[in-house]
Image 1 (tube, rainbow, N blue to C red):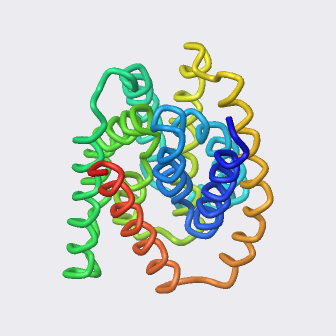
Image 2 (cartoon, rainbow, N blue to C red):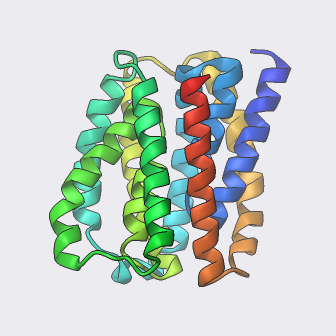
Length: 246
């Protein structure tokens, strides 16, 4: 692996980590498309898996005081683990282009719906009924293409949780499904020497940038935070579609 490729990994990881530490999502969905341009999708998914798991564990622990304000986490995480197993096993077998297109278009539909009905929300009974399906789908997408953030963030956004409860919810789901994904990748010998080196470089970039993002998040609240989440989703949708159609 060349120094230029490692530089791309570091810069993509730094950008993704900055956005993630502020909004709770955005690292893999921003980093994977960029890294895949120079190393391919499979390499990008494996490389990002390590630092992504680490930053999710850290952010989830940092926001643990808001756990009692969350909803449906047991169902979302449980079914997410099952989905992650299915998706990771299928990583090298399924065509990713249709998945990326469907995911990208779905995000745009959600954003359009949000601006059409800004106060749209689902009842606790409805989210409880559908959370297993959402957890299964998000886990499968995490395993198959390394990106589940748009699904998890879109669904959790409907809950209208306080900022820290929102961060805790999505990072816990990401962490659980990411741990399953990484375990299966390791058991299948996917972490080669080159990929390990790139993952180490990405981890350093994430570790340096994350505290900066946390300080920025402390200055944001209410509508500003909500706008940042929506902008992150919009950028992620564009990145997914560009990656799928390139």
